[in-house]
Image (tube, one colour):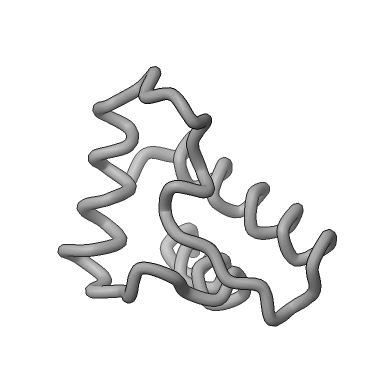
Length: 73
């Protein structure tokens, strides 16, 4: 996964957690605007979420952030 996507995921998770608490859930669509302006990046996120990690449609933001942070180590 490219660094820009990792950074975006971490930032969105941080924002959602700050706004709604540590129990907030989200889907991979949370990382994108309502219009499909970068289909390649969207597919990269979807493939990671669905095929590689085998996550449910909605997951806890804390879990997603931890997964992405562990990829950066």
